[in-house]
Image (cartoon, rainbow, N blue to C red):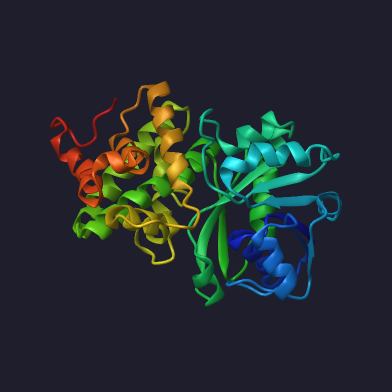
Length: 329
């Protein structure tokens, strides 16, 4: 099988390694010339996670990368997807299958990433998403995990789940694209909240955070037309260990930095997702208290008065009106 991976950051480079090394597929890995992720791979043949194994061809030629295979996996920053697809659709990609291995909701529009793809001109039946728990460091150490592939195209998701599986990753296929995408994006917001708790010494509150967070996200998914239960599957609750507890979690680390008044240099997708989810909550009339607290912690900055102010935003949740645990908005 031939596979193209667009994006050569940590996940993109791992996906290329996985397909070439574990599944023995022929892989073309695309990155943009002049970007650090691409230049490091080009100049050294590896990054901090993986080496360019046999079977991987690195290129900065987008047209050549798209021509190389029928299955195109995209792994870039979620907020950059629309702009990137404007470049992709300059080529004839009408017969290509696109797999989004990324998690987020577009800020400003509230669009799920598959919706961004269709608005970019890609047929809905040609789009799938690949999400769920797993850290590169654990996979490279041989520790397996379970992930999920979802699409509105039943045949496509079943075929991808079957052809992508290995002893390292067991794939399930989902049946609720809305819930899968929203849940996958939202877990990063909960990861930031967990980091704030850890960084402030309130780790014991992570249990309630998980319970209330899953309910909050499930309520939003239901309001958007998805299944309430999807929040309790692999895309969301199933990904909590890797996002709310793992030392490899960028979103958790970002929250810890917020609590300590330190600057975090790496990408934390939950920051912009908190803004997008806040907008969705307002649009659909769903209460998202944890999301709103994370949004305030991320975007109010100096107005909070430093680390103590950041934690006060989270603790303010205790001042909310008492109500039934499983109330329905």
